[in-house]
Image 1 (cartoon, rainbow, N blue to C red):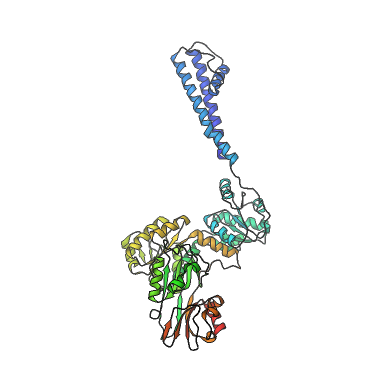
Image 2 (cartoon, rainbow, N blue to C red):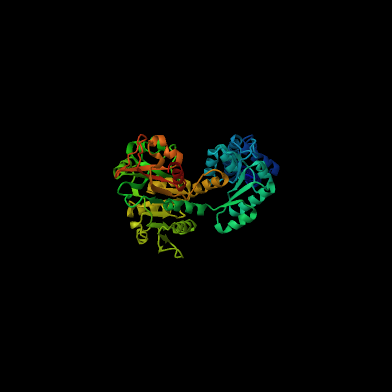
Length: 544
């Protein structure tokens, strides 16, 4: 029974009770106060006629005060009940008639699609990624109102129970490439078991909220089990552990000939909303963009068509003056690319994962948490300045906020920014809608649980596509010109062919960093290139 039906039943029962009560009172008043007895059916008729305004006053006039007061009360009650009927009964009835209803079975013929069981915030990210790769999907949502809302917003929805064979058959699971179970642990295992009944061969991906329950998802038959909080911890840690290794030789030093720096793009910068190609960074400043973090993913080299926004952090190289010029365009602080001095605030599942990743990467860190437990170095409150000082925030290079409450993260960001204006603040967001507030509070880099887990779900489903990668390293290598000698940088097209960026050319003891496409590489030149391990290997194969 839905809300409108319950409301209607309550109104009808209440109305009948009020009419009967007034009929009894009227019968009593006519007998005792007026001395004109009436049978009960007549009294009931008078009350109904009064309430419906179809008749009135058949026994008038009334002489007694009690009877007159009863009639006044009955008149007022009848009018009130009529007006109550409009919002209680009629308006909801009209709204329901006009409402868009989600289909109960798939309206279009689909194959090789993804069946998403229940729709969560991470489901929004998953759908966005699937649409990017032109992969069809259908959401199976059991809640009527939620399904109707999603359908009205333009999602492909089936209003059915994903724990039932009938519900999954309505979503044509047998023709799907994968199923994603994204509810509670108990419901997800039930969905996976049901999916095995419908089609034993379909790939099933299950989301686990409690990592220690992952084995039960495996036992239910899930092909892949995704732990969102663990993924978020790994993603946050990757911002610190993504490394830059150099092989330049003793006579060429970073920081003397040129610098490597991280440069967050300020949310008010003119660069926001432009692509890397449109930004004019290389042409106007001479800086080389080695890589960039885009919404939790490190890319090297970045695509020229990649759009810059307030969450983008550029990894760039150039002279001090070039970096200062770029700084003015981004309205951000320039931070030298160095590792260490990291403070992890919060030691739940996310914080524990971050600490493990930092330990594996050899990055020193300090952990602050409210509770005293193994792994916690400083016991204190993330919103208290004294406790943050005790954890070393004033001297830290990076602070990673792994708190479960977004309001605490926002306040802690304000306190940390006050204690150390130059520190890099990396923050976890539980709710996607709070990401902008965290940036406004002063965070440099924010990842929401929904974004990371949604993109990882997409990566798990689209096995052939690199949707997300969290473990990339950049090498900066000094090498001989080799087969590049005699060619211009424009003709050689090093970046598109190898994925490497030529940062500098050392010639006769002079370091050239202002490298346009017309610069010709000469015999005897030494090149400084930057790229991933694979990119450097490709460069070596092609040009050495």
